[in-house]
Image 1 (tube, rainbow, N blue to C red):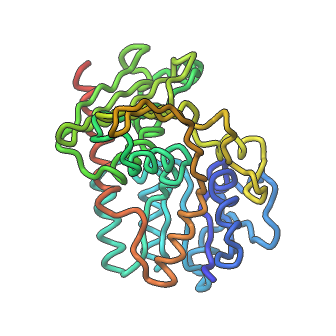
Image 2: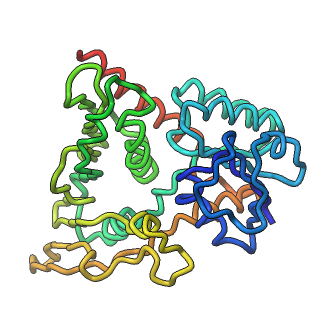
Image 3: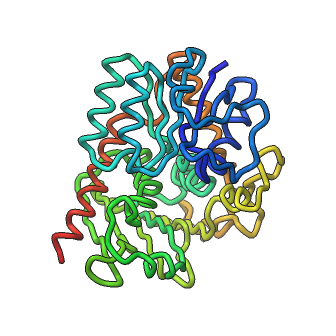
Length: 341
C-alpha cells in the first residue's frame, strides 16, 4: 500500500483528487488531510484524520506521499518543506510560479532521492485520448494542423478582477491543462507564437490566450477565452487526407460537479451524441464520414502511475523536463503580454 496525505482540503482535493485516489483503494490509503483553517465544507472521508497541524503529516513515518493542492502561491514553499521532511510529493498544476522554482524543487528531490511530479490528470481526458487514437489510425494522412480549445462564457470572472495577477491569470490557471497535453504528445516544439491578452484593458485579468506550437510543417494551436458564448470544438484535427472534429470535452468534470462519482460504471463516459466525426478520403479517393467511439477518460491513471513509480520504481508519467518547459512557456506568455502594454 502507498500511504498518502493531502495538504489542502478544498475543491481540488475533494473533487479532482480523492475520487480517483480512493478508487485505487487496494493500492492507496489516504491517512491524513491538512487544512490550516480546519474548515470542513466537504463530506469527510471515513477513516481519514483531519488536522490543522502540518507536523501531523511531516513527522508521520507511515506517510510516503504528500499531495499538495493549495493555491499556486503556496506550492513552492510547501513542496520544499515536504521534500525536506523526506516525503515524496505530487504537486498540483500550475506546478510553481516560476521555472526557477520548479528547477530548484526537482534538484532538491533528486538530491534526496524522492519522487516529485506535477499532477497532470488532463493527459487522461477522453477527448484527448480519442484524438490520439484517430491520429494513430493514419486515416488523416500527414498531420498538418491541430486546434485545441478550452472556452467559457464567464465574463463575470475577468470583470470581477480589478488588477492583474500572474497566478490568477487564464494562461496559468487553464493553459497548464492544454499546454501539457501538447508537450506530452508532440514534444518540445521548434518555436512558439504567443498571443496572450487582457481583453478588458491594461492591469486587468489575462482572459484570453492563443499559442501556436510549430513542429516542422505541423502547427498545434491552444486557444482559450472567457468570452465565448458558443464555445469552439474541443479539438479540430486536419491532415492531408481528412479531418476530425470532437465538439465536446471530457465528461469527468461534468459528472464530478454533480457528485456523480467514479464508482458508477458510466462515470465520464461519452454518449453517441458526444462522439467526434472523422471525415477522410481512403487510398482509392472514396469519401468517408463516420463517428468515432470515444476512448474512456480516467484521472485515476495518474494515481496508478504515481503508485507504480514510488512502490515499484517505474518511470514517472510526467517528466521533470516537461514540467519545467511548461513553466517557461507560461512565464514567457505572461512576460510578452505585459511587454506589449
